[in-house]
Image (cartoon, rainbow, N blue to C red; front, side):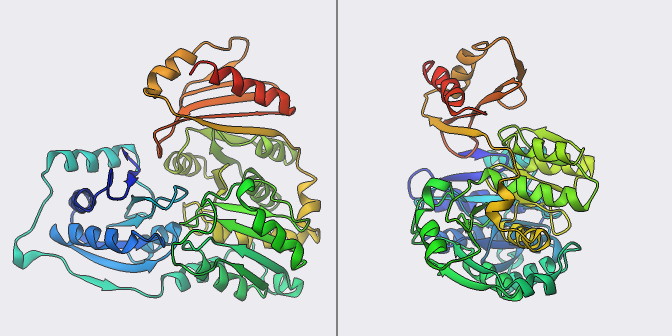
Length: 440
C-alpha cells in the first residue's frame, strides 16, 4: 500500500527489498541528499529492511545515521535534533508481524504532508532517483544515544514535577509486547522513581499478543496489575506511538481514554484547545467543555492533526487510537511522553487512575472493519443512508447526531473500510454499525 505517509505491505509478497530500496532512493532524492536518520522497530524483518533502506539512501548520496531499534517518535525527534534532512522509520506500527513499512519524516521531525508525500511517490514511479557514481555514494554512522536523548527531553517537560512523582513510588506494570518500547519505558520509569514490572520487555519482535493495544488484547496485563497490586499498567504497540492504560482495578479502560485524560490534564494547566481526528471519542469534547474550551477535528492521520495543532497553537492533540501529541517535546504521537503526563496527573490529583476515570462521561464505541473490493464504491453506496443529521465528508462519511455518530472511511494502512460508531447506549452504537454492514 502506497500513500503520502509512506509504503507498507506484507514482507516478501507485496513488500519486497527491491521496492524498499527504490522507495528509500526516491525519498533520499526528495530530501536532496544530506544526513538521513534511520531507525526501526523490532520486527523480524527489520534487519533486512534496514539494509535495503540504507543501500537505497546511500546510492543517492545520503549520509545515513543509524539509531537502531527505537520508537517512531524517537526517529522523528532525532531527525530534528541531529539537524538531518529527513528520517525513515521502518515499522508497520500496529499491523501484524508479517507486515512492515517505511514512514517518511521531514527535516522538521514531522511526517510528510500530502504535497511532500506525493513528490516522493512521483519520484518512485518515474524511476528517476538521483543515483550517484561510485565515488559519490553516501556513507553511514551509528548514533547510540537516541533513547537517552529522548528521555532527557521528557524529563524537562514544564509541567513535570519529578520529585513529587518519585515520592509517590508508583508500582507500574508495562507490556511492550517485544516491540521497540522496552528500553525507553524502562529508562523513563526508572528516572521517575517507579517500581517497574515488565512484561515482554525484550526487543526481539516475537509479539506476545495482537500488537494493537486494544483493551481486548490486554488480558495478561490486566491480571498482572492485580497480581502485583500495581497502581497502573501501560501497553503500547510495536513502534510506541500508541498508549493504552490498565487501571489499578485491573481494567483495560480502552485506548480512547488516553487522549481524553491527557487533554484534561493539559486543560487544567494551560489555556489551550485540543486537536484530534474525526474518529476520536466525544469524551475529549466533554472534558473540553468542563474547562470551557473546545476541540478541533481533522481527517484521520497524524499529519492532519499536527497541521491543525500548529495552526491553532494547540498544546495537546492526538488520536483516539492512544496517540498523544505533546508539542513541547515534538509534534509526534508519543506513548512514552504520555506515560510521564499520566503519572504527573495521578500525582497532582492524588487519586487512583480508576477514580480519575470515573469523572469522565463514558460512551459505547463500536469499531469494525469490512473487506470490500472497491472502498470508493462502497462509500458511494452508503452516502445518504442517514438524513436527519449532520454530515462531515472531509474523510469518508461521518454522520453526526446530538447523542451519537458513525464514521465510515477507507483505511490508509490496510485494504479495508473502517466503520466506527459511538453513542451513550451500546444498542444505539451497534445499530448504526449494523445498518452500514447491510450495504456490503
